[in-house]
Length: 59
Image (tube, rainbow, N blue to C red):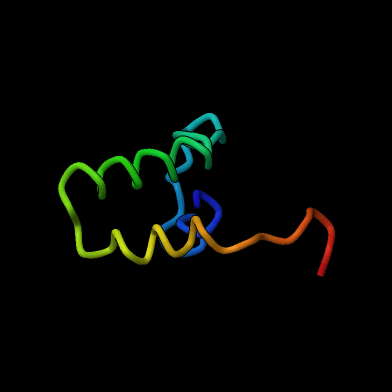
């Protein structure tokens, strides 16, 4: 989910050149926030979680 979010809204890069948070945490925080506050994007996030993903390096 973090990779999908990164494509939409990139994680900020700090002054030392590293991202502010990992992609795993980025996705987890967005999902937790959507679950807690019942955001309208919740169905799209759940649909994203239920879709299979490609193996790394596969097209």
